[in-house]
Image (cartoon, rainbow, N blue to C red; front, side):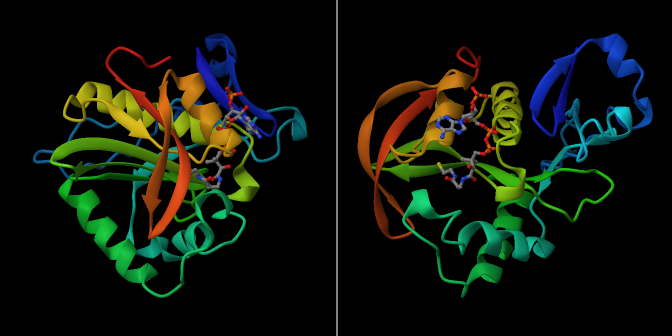
Length: 231
Ligand SMILES: CC(C)(COP(=O)(O)OP(=O)(O)OC[C@H]1O[C@@H](n2cnc3c(N)ncnc32)[C@H](O)[C@@H]1OP(=O)(O)O)[C@@H](O)C(=O)NCCC(=O)NCCS
């Protein structure tokens, strides 16, 4: 079976149907962890079509997850400095400092300390970004915890991209074994993000005041053990 990401969302199609698609683009992968020796690439068996049923078929472009790059500044600005994108995260962040933030993230991704994956909706245009999923660990009250977050730009929303990309990263975390329990803190009013947690198998641990970029958000605290809970 193969997951197909179409204009109306993700659907799973039978292998026989998938075989009718251009197989040359079906298994393209890019997952550069920067770990010594390089990790095995993750297969991204998802098809993206921008035009749905036009011409009676799928375009066959493949979605990729790749590490953040220095050239992703514009995508960061659109995700972090936009009032709509940041509505559930306390409002837009200042434009100043985004280049430095991207540079720090590139370093962390290259060092494999954080997984900062950009969602590329069409592998033939790797500079185009639809969103991002980030998995990182931090120390709170002397305890190390892993946390995951996601963003998808408005024109790509509502088609299952965030859920798919989050599942891919959690599957990878399950196999990597270093992350342990993974926590997520969407604002209590963030319908899509809470929907992602619920449907991927996270357990709701409670409601908390969470600090994000200097602001306090009323958030749901979700937790998942990717080894046992991933739906
Ligand atoms: C949250 C966000 C990443 C979702 O991206 P997306 O690609 O549109 O999400 P998906 O299409 O994968 O949908 C995710 C789930 O949310 C559900 N959903 C969508 N809108 C919803 C709503 N208003 N209420 C409840 N659930 C909703 C979908 O049905 C889907 O669940 P399902 O597959 O079980 O049906 C995107 O809206 C975004 O980037 N928002 C701004 C930034 C942000 O809030 N980031 C998250 C911080 S925690």
